[in-house]
Length: 339
Image 1: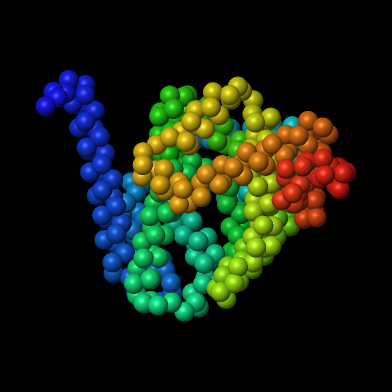
Image 2: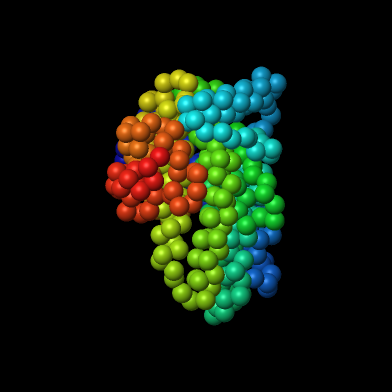
């Protein structure tokens, strides 16, 4: 029998403790959804309780210096993105530094609105289905709540035109430590990315409505037992443009070196334990990464040929969005739009 050295023994204890902690988090999540009600395909109150039970909320005790740092990051990102991108926009009125439970609460409302058309679908064994759906949603929100670092939220399908910007301080601090990078610098880089999304949606007032209509049509078709590939393709192409433009704009506007940050974050996305890799596949995070890369490559070529301001012409009208084919052939988009 192999004898572990003291460092090896400590690593073994750390691994065992981590496994037990993850198991207990999962147990609390499942326990919280076993008492679901009878209305709708998902019990959202149980989802909220379960997601939070399995997700430590994290520390949100900021001192005055850190609060000022967030404000400066967001303000500087706005000014730099306006200047470099040649795009006029305002920041959302609602900007929040959150812990993980705040983020879960905010996103439950978005998920609830998105799946509401499915509540009328007939299902076999409705109570069992509702419990499984609720458990799946709780695990999804818990996983994302532990990993999302920032979010621009256009509050799609809401009854107002309010947009919001969230920063998950516990996750930003944790990932900065894991990557061994300076926390204020990493926080600033995240701010540039999320403010780049704010720039897109504020510069294109039609964008929220465009995405809402395609999302609603796709979900409604699914509730009717159909699958509208055209609507889905349009939605995916638009989201690829949204992600790609923000990726390019943040990199060209960021006021510091970022190659090491990009390399470490990309390496982190492709690593992690079996559970993280499984959840990433199930949630389509690899697909999201491909959207970033494909969209960024499209806009990089457009910007290299005509300048970054020309790339911003995509937000003038919905007709200027690249099609799925044009995303792989930027010259075709340039000939059609002629920015």
